[in-house]
Image (cartoon, rainbow, N blue to C red):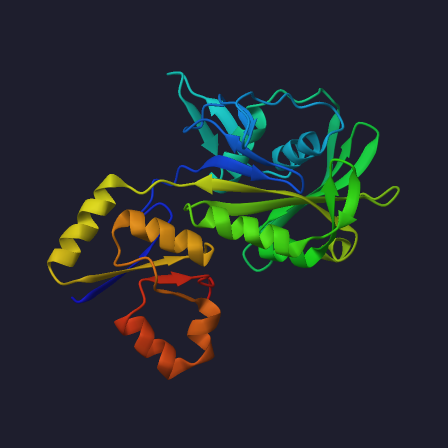
Length: 289
């Protein structure tokens, strides 16, 4: 054996994601806490005092969106430990929303599009108080294509994609996995939700950056493999900078060699030669291929 290719999430990492940063059009927030326990303040990035979420603010709408456009549940077991049901990404968003008391409002789920790896988002149609709203969470690059506007503290503005891409690049370098959230008003009397409903009028709310720490035993095993002359390659759907940052924490070669699925498919012989000789991280693996 000369090469091992390993999935990242849950194999090389703990599969216990925790949101560490929230990015909106106007602010960046750091989030305290390292477990599923819904305890930890949210601070503006350069301020020591935690925020209080006021009704009608951008942050309140963002937190309510990630709470309601979510299939996970946060539960406390008989031993007092907090756990999540469902996927770790949705679980991390559910925990974040639970860290801040949100204003009480009546909600009713009308329709839902479950997460699908083909579309890379999920969406829900809700009645929230007196409003009918469509909520969306998913991969930032996908939501950027759906959104024409972004929500700010002062209303709507045209989507500033360079701003978002720069922030995502910055936090991906810290090893954070990024998930975006958006919304749009629903049509009067709408009771069903389809993918076509998301093709126009979608408004970006923000992006969460979450950390899934490396497994200590994986770091040891990778070191043993390298000592034995076995190369280790990591396969992940994360942003390339996130992949390289986590790979560096794990000790997989250097942090400069990554290839995306699109690049791998683009030039068969060249890509295959690079992947066999140089590449440490394969990004954006497509299920079913």
